[in-house]
Amino acid sequence: MDYLSRDAAPFTDEFWEQIDKTVVKTAGNVLHGRRFIPLYGPLGIGVTSITVDDADKLEEVSKNGFMMTSGRKFLEIPTLYEDFLLSARDLESAAHAGYPADLSKAVNAAEDCALKEDRLVFFGNADFKIDGLFNVAGSNKIKKNDWTVGENAFTDIAAAINLLVEKGIYGAYSLAISPDLYLQMQRLQPGTGLLEIDRVKKLLDKRIYSTPVLGKGKAVLVCADSRNMDLVIGQDLKTAYLEQTELNHKFRILETMLLRIKRPQAIVIFE
Image (cartoon, rainbow, N blue to C red; front, side):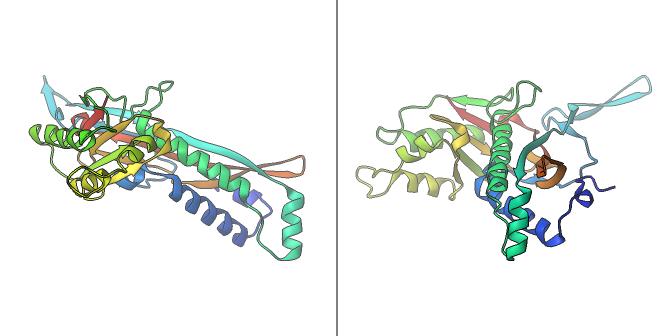
């Protein structure tokens, strides 16, 4: 069975290849969560749920001849999607002239779908009770001072790293911040001759990621080793054919994915 219904569409393999390359390239330019959180998968579209283990509480419990796993839950892997429409007349015109079709609408849809993924990674989804980095229970909180003053940004980030070390959480620490905070660190530190951002990059081995989905004034430090968290990918970003409506062609970019947080203590949120 062709899950993506491409067999029902009147397009060549070359056209679908052009669509796939456009979608993947566009999403790659937008996605930030995937840049520091390890991937688990892709597992396939048929995988609809996944186990999520609390790494600090996972154990087998037996009683009266019955055994269960404590600290484990099962979550459904949600589908993220975005639709777009291509004009049948424009596609025919491009094919007749022998030049590639204009896929601007596919680019816009791929960008929107990628932003949905990052919003799910950072903020989860309240409607479906999905946890993200900023709203999962059990994460660490640290007061954020004014990052436009002195060495506050460097000091706060160093304190967050030290907090994780004290809790025995070691590994590669990554910082995700909103664009305004990133810009606030683009200034020289008195007596050092260095930009504050350069000092922070050195502290984190350049693992700093600025994304617009965070809005303003938000930052989170994570130890994103696979034992602490990963991004479960069922179906990676792909384009399906929906229907021909009013002679035009309707498509859907979709993916199935879920942020699996195994150890909330590996997260520090700056408040």
